[in-house]
Image 1 (cartoon, rainbow, N blue to C red):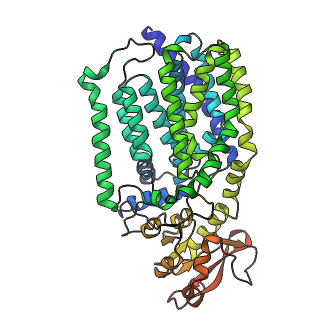
Image 2: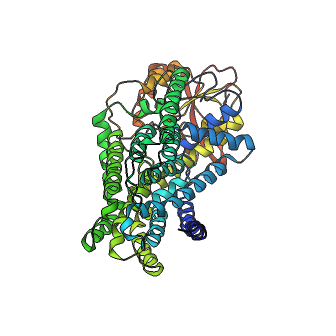
Image 3: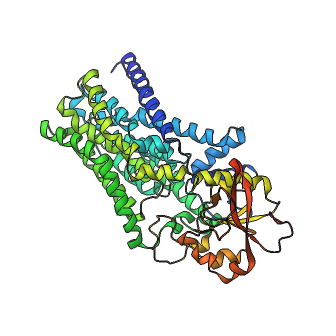
Length: 518
């Protein structure tokens, strides 16, 4: 390919990426979604910028985040004075766009026998990825999902092209972004060292000294990171990992339905693409090994998500990193059908299958979970509570609560969470998971009360139209707090006004020198 033709090809890919990216942004905005956990990352970033270090509460080293690189990027935005949520969302859009840019090249590597058709099949893969609600929703949610997805696709792209240097660099950044990073990074790096690269002659890269720069970067960088983590926090893995795992049977009870739901929403349309490709042709012979390795990565990741218990936040957050790989793989197999031989046919097929992927964004359990998270019973109420408490809390006040994101971020108060996300003692408890609520199974009411918080937010933060005359209804995961003798003896129920003429009902420790409610 000549220099001019290559440049034109790049410009074409970039131009065609804008349309899918715009579609993904519109798709994401339709959810009107931000996740409370994003504010946990922002709190760590704010404490870092303020000089307290990477801590949730100043002076208490605990790794209650699982996304170091994302926290550092957020800290950069805070240092620049950019509105925090806007900055997180701009990063999400940027990394989603970068991921979409890579997909045509991945399809081309997977289907080298059909190079005359792959330009349009690659563009179809971009459109189909943007048509998935999972990608659109989590692009604007404020968490590291778009960054990790981009890095996973970049490492996959490097493996397909047998380029160990970028595979090692992408892998190291994955390690810094998510706890799952080391496993995927190792797989893609080993893959990049295999002989052969689709259209290239089968030449082993192992004899070239530069080949080992990528592996050395990944191994040494990962070792340094884990040693730093252990020296800083005392554990080899994030505290959030320990808080959310520990009962395999309980994890499978939530993880298996989560995976099956993902397959029901996105599986049928993609299966049709794969079956059509196999019936009309075959898996491209020169890309068969890469096809099987890609399928193996998808299977391995799906098994991992199932085993750790899935997620309770909606729209398949944990499957987003491999969803573009799954779509690109399906489209590559379908290339032999001739459906992507020209712009009109490729666009028609993309629209048809995009519409088939769309119902999951409108109906079903995962969509309801997103809506529920934004309701006043959850984040909508936490916004009201956090804003009011930020105005009224006395200096030095401490709070115990379940939702550890927006309220701690907004108030800046010392906060203790019920579920061990930022509490190593709760996180490392051995318990049987019985609540069916992934990631929120471990609690210890006695330990929370031992910390003597000034205020306790029961009922998942209780917002009502008028002050309650009876006790706040606790969640089942909060019963060990409200039934405890120390709670019943030392705390009284009070209320404060919040926006919209409503009130926040909460418990206040008796005898405070500067009570929120006299």
